[in-house]
Every structure is written in C-alpha cells, then in structure tokens.
Length: 317
Image (cartoon, rainbow, N blue to C red; front, side, top):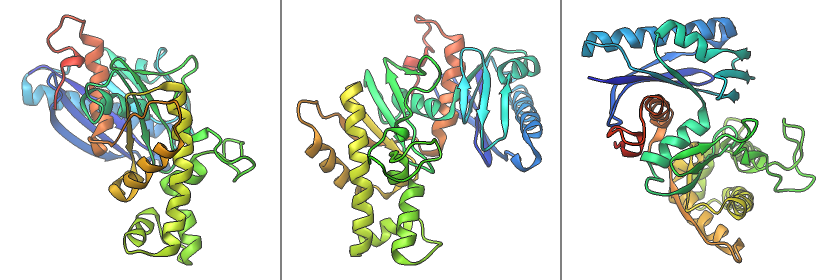
C-alpha cells in the first residue's frame, strides 16, 4: 500500500502516523520529544522515530513510504527546509529536511505546526470546500493559518498568520514578543486560565475550570470569559477585515468549551462587523490529529500533480 510518513513535533511530545493516499491514518504512534536532553537529542529522536516509521511501513505494507512530512514549532523556513528557531526545543538553524531526506531516502516536506494543522483543517476538516479560510487555535498562545485555494500562506519571511500578536488593547499587558496588548495575552487558553486563577483565588485553576464555572452561572467567571471573548472578537474582526475568509475555524484548548465559547463569540463578532461579510465561524474538526494529517498532506503534495487521482485536493477522511 502506497503511504507517506507524517510527524508532528511538539514541545513535549511527538505524534506520528503512516498516512494513505485517501488521508487514512494507517498506523499511529507517539513518543516524548525529550527536550530536557537538549536540542541535539531532540533532532536525533526525530530522525530515529522517522526511521522506525519507515521500517513499520516496510513490515506492514511490503514497501517503504514514498515521502515524509514533518510539522515543527517555532520559526520555520519551509522553502529551505530549515527549522530556524524554537524556544521550547532550544534549536537554531536545524537543516531538518536535509537530515531526514538523508536518513529516509525519500522527499521530505517541512512545515510550521500551526500552518500544517490549518492545512488539514482547511482541506479535509472543518473548512473543507472553502476557497478561503482562517484557522486560529487558542492554546498556550494564539497563532493562525491563512488558507487560499487549498494551500496555506507562509508569507515572505514565514510569519504569516501570527494573529496572536495583533494589538487589541493599547498599552495593555506586556507580551513576551515585546509589544503591549497582544491578543494572546487576553484570549489564549493560558491567559484565560491566568485571569480565572487570579479571580477565584486558586492558583491551580485553568481555562477549562473557568468554562465550567461559566456554565454553572458564576458571575466572576462570566466576566473573565467575556473579557476574553471580547478581545478575541476584536482580533478576529481585524483579521477578517484584512483577509475576507469564507470560513473561520477556531481550535485549540479553549475551543473545547464548545458553545460556551462559540455562542458569545459569534455574537461578539457579529456586533463588530459593519461592511464586512460574516464568515462561517466553526469549531475545528480534527482535534489533535490535525498536525499529523497536515504533515501527511505536505508529503502527498510532494508526490502529486494536478491530474493525479490521489492529489491532496481529493483526499478524504
């Protein structure tokens, strides 16, 4: 069976899969990233994990993978195949594509983790069929993936989609990026958790606890939640004014609150638009498999041409 290798490298764990031409996750595995052992060890573990997946493919299907796709965090030069910088992994200028190509002997695609997850959500997930979409995961921080005709825009320097650093509160909270008032300081899962912990007096409280308190009618929780929703709506309206997406996909940990988030968020966005066309605002569909599926799509993109029946535009789940 023809298949590709897909790797989604995170700060603490790696998710991997063998992906068929129809988008099926044929085999899945997980391992620790091992960042506590340093960046060289992380790279070695990625290479070893990929090699093990290649061997799994040979054992299961009688042939090695045809290509590989890898999603990594931080700053990524996708055209050169270099993992430029990742604070949580401690690496700089790692020629990951070249290293994997040498180890595996097949073409390798390297992508940014959020853009890769967005590729999967836009092409085969919640944004399927939309010619323009914006994927925004709300996690420890906030990032974005701008989808255009089945592809995700990286930008001239690899920074496209960084909506988390749109300023939504002038002279607001200091952000690690150096600005004040960035969206992710108000509407990320980490920011909501921090605000709720301060409001309720429990330093261990997180965003999920805040959502539960909102659902139970807690007045303080509702204030914290609405502050986050308002900031998020401000950032999203800025983005949709610039990008005019047909579908706006919200994912990440905060989106797990479901309609506790989406009902007030849709209303807050609706109140802010004037001439803009409201996009469909929907939850992400692929969960934590988005990164692997997206990495698989990157790999198939290396192999497919526009007339190939297994072209990624035809991939289904």
